[in-house]
Amino acid sequence: MSRRARRNDTAAFTAKVALAALKGDGTLAQLAEQFDVHPNQITSWKAQLEGGAADVFGPDGGSRIAEPTIDVKSLHTKIGELTLENEFLEGALTKAGLLSAKR
Image 1: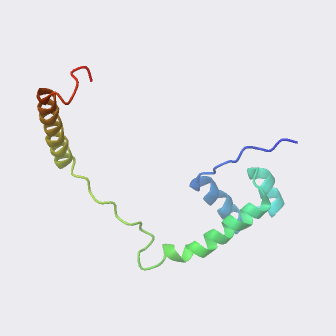
Image 2 (image 1 turned 90 degrees about the horizontal axis):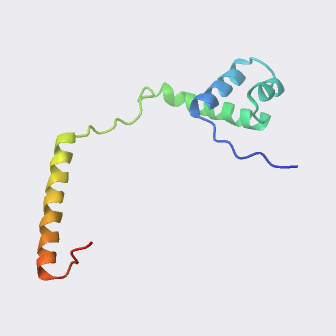
Image 3 (image 1 turned 180 degrees about the horizontal axis):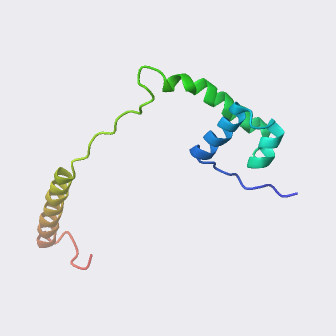
């Protein structure tokens, strides 16, 4: 008897199964067969959904932590500065004989 490879379910699939269990679309056995998941896993996901549902209606309103805006222009500027520094130092080391020309 060979073991099935470990499966990583997506969050969307997990939510779909947990919601189906919460709605009572079928018995645990029927849902387990339908979604090819162990009944204990469905029970666990259902409990996680019920436990985390209060966070959606909490003071944050279910919003996630806002990602900081990325300033692409400043990142490009920094890349340019670092490239210039590296080229300068490489030239200085080559002239001093500490860096081989073949590299």
